[in-house]
Length: 175
Image (cartoon, rainbow, N blue to C red; front, side):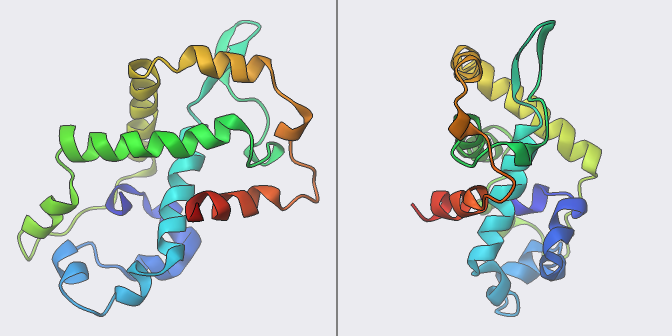
């Protein structure tokens, strides 16, 4: 899933730009182990995908369906739609591995000289948008999303001074 991220998201953790776009070099040397084996690596991937998925969750609006209003920081990490963004990632992985054949195993089988190009932000956005729509439809989650949205609680919103969202992401990863 790392190799599908665009540079614009990876640059938020600049050290990870050092990981070569040649999987052979990254996987068959110890040079990058300190980056790949760090929990921050997984956090970068999980948070990048969750934030991206969030952009494509559709909720009922007066004029039909639309994106979740406001900024993502307006919502607590415990908001069920935030949790759904993390759950959807498991389905992404299955799609990557079984339908798109972008499996970890494929990385081991790539030619030594092959470089994986960066996806553009637009390509990544298209991928996330299409997969999110597909998974929500396949799992028939839109009725659940509608109910969650219609029944929001005060606890679903962040206070400006709250650090719960940041803590939630770490707790979610560790649990």
